[in-house]
Amino acid sequence: MTTAGTMAGKTALVVSAHSADFVWRAGGAIALHASQGAAVTVVCLSYGERGESAKLWRQDGMTLDRVKTERRKEAEAAAEALGVADIQFWDLGDYPIALPDEALYRLADLHRATHPAFVLTHSRADPYNHDHPAVSSFAQHARIIAQAHGHNPGVPVAGSPPVFLFEPHQPEQCRWMPTMLLDITAVWDRKQAAIECMAGQEHLWEYYGRVALQRGAQAARNSDRKGIKYGEAYEAVFPHVVSDLLP
Image (cartoon, rainbow, N blue to C red; front, side):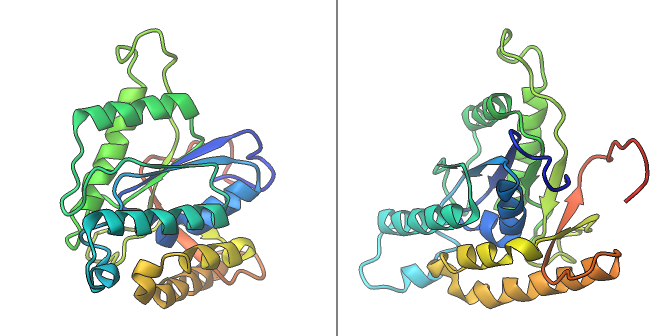
């Protein structure tokens, strides 16, 4: 993504299908780049109120509005722990998520407003959760529209930020292949704190700790860096443009 000390004044955009996805899958990247001075915007398109809030629905008298309120509180607390500059909740439904043209243009305009240095979003396939690949396509489509001179003429077009797809829950079934391993050891405590804000899905806390350790071990094995313990993995959508091949 970038090296330490180069993110001051830059921005990043994270497009999360549900209110917890950005925490499990990209919390380390968010905390790391925020600590380097990047202003990170997180868009939660849904609260995950139907399909990802089973613990809340087991409570007597639970309602859809109460679930949304609780999931929003959790996500806001997690965003604060990670250093997110701006978190937005678009409330586009859940199981299934609705992604109308109005929302697509809204996201394209957000691209133009923030000019992100990179974009993080979901894998292109997920047979366990169709909201995730729908959002992946949606996020990439918005990026393309933001580059189109005919969309809102007179407003400066967006650039070509790299897009990285964060790790799905079951990567093999999602045909997702990591092409980048990110060392998040320095900010693991922040990600762990954010994970523990997501009380509605407490059953995933330990799982994502194991994922971070596994990716950290792989990062250490694939580099000369010492002291890597925790990591996150990403799949790049576009080729990297570099000036040399030095690591």
